[in-house]
Amino acid sequence: MFENILKGNREFVEEDFRKNTAFYQTLAKGQNPQILWIGCSDSRVVPERITASKPGDLFVHRNIGNIVPCNDWNFVTMVEYAIKHLKVRHIVICGHSDCGAMKALDKEGDDAYIPLWLNNAREAKERVDRKMGVVTSQEAMKQRKKMIELENIRLQTEHLKKYPIVARALEKGDISVHGVYYDLESGQISVVT
Ligand SMILES: [Zn+2]
Image 1 (spheres, rainbow, N blue to C red):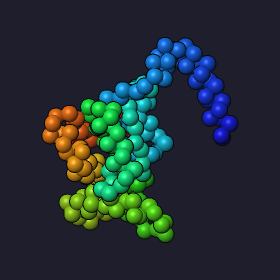
Image 2: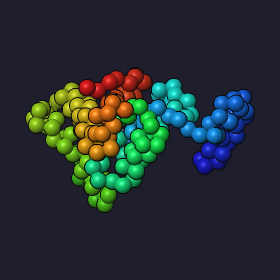
Image 3: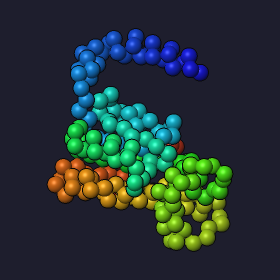
């Protein structure tokens, strides 16, 4: 499998890079992305591909469950750099259907770190369960799963706005924050309000 990556890179150089030299040479001098994309690490949700974006368009942060942790140096360093230095204009938080992280909120396992990380998303599940109560039918369970995925996007947007650097940029009108949901079955992105 690893060989495929090297082979794929040779194909990229032949079929894309060498045919678009001017574009890639401009990129080699620096980046100026307008959008910070916060998404799930899921291998099926590829930000550039599902938005037809080019290299240089998106500054990307991905983690399990498209989560905005409340106390995380890795995360806030990335946000500080995006807002202060890259001067992005938009921050997009993208959740998706069939998200393993959201399913894991219902599971109890013996993992050391996953449950701790998912504590940042547990409130989304609790909100939906408070609203829906106990569900038993297949249809209602499916609906609950999607509602948790959507609520998690809203929750992470709330977390994001609590970071002072984000709150200040929003207040000044420098950035706007958007929640979106990617449906793996249709390929479509919808805006979450
Ligand atoms: Zn996911």
